[in-house]
Image (cartoon, rainbow, N blue to C red; front, side):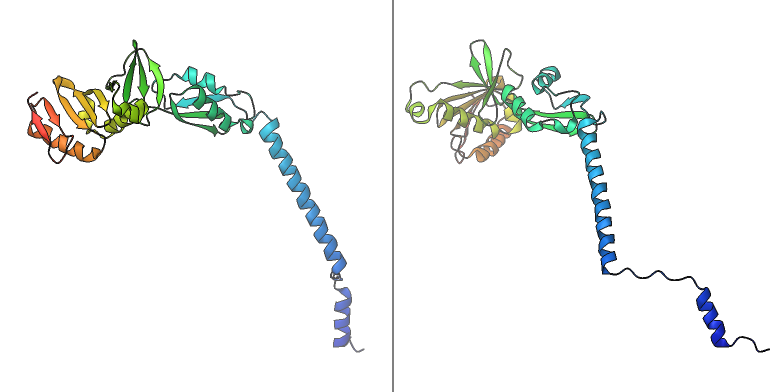
Amino acid sequence: MAGPTTAQRGAAKRADAPARPPHPGPEGRRIGRRTLAVLIGVAAALLTGFAVWALYGSSWLRVESVSTSGLRVLTREEVEAVAAVPVGAPLISVDTGAMEARLSQKLPRIDRVDVVRSWPHGIRLKVTERKPVLLLEKGAKFVEVDATGARFATVDRAPKGVPVLELAPAKSASLRRFGSDRLLAEAVQVVGELPKGVAKDTEAVRVTSYDAISLRLTRDRVVTWGSSEDGPVKARVLTALMKAAPKAGHFDVSAPTAPAVSAS
């Protein structure tokens, strides 16, 4: 008896093979895409809801600690009292800008402050205090003046190493023309341009007019500075004079191209 032919065997294999699923048509593909989009949207909504809950509703990311840095004169207690950090509140809800504005307004000694969230539980207050460059006597107290000419604090005791400003223009034409604030600004500029060694030894800055500024140094030395113009040049000339005549008592750099030195 003859066996099955090759054609018959091929037909039998095709009959035994599993049926291939038909390719989805355009409508099926659209339904699949819509289903995927819905699933992605649901997942995104769930993640967003979880994130909002974690930031605002959970106890995981709430303010538990406050740290303060950069203080020289101010105390941590007074800075943090003004900052009024809402301990226990969600860290994300802390209004850092309002806190910075409040600190700068109520504590004028602060030159700059950055309020920073320190995840997961902290607030950091990074403070930069103003530094006095001159002092104004006010009765038995002293008003501190910074490098911008701003009067920012009144203290009972003069800080060490800060010269006193002797503003004595009387009723001069200079005072009428420039005003005391302008003369103060001139004195601040002069102090900012002094050589480091001279600045350290300066006990007082005397201003009698716009172009008559002088310095009283330790060991009864006096420097006639003149106006605030050509400050860097005057500083270099003064440094050279002091090296050449270390025992002199009077140095005049008001005209830096023709300086003078004398015993007193």
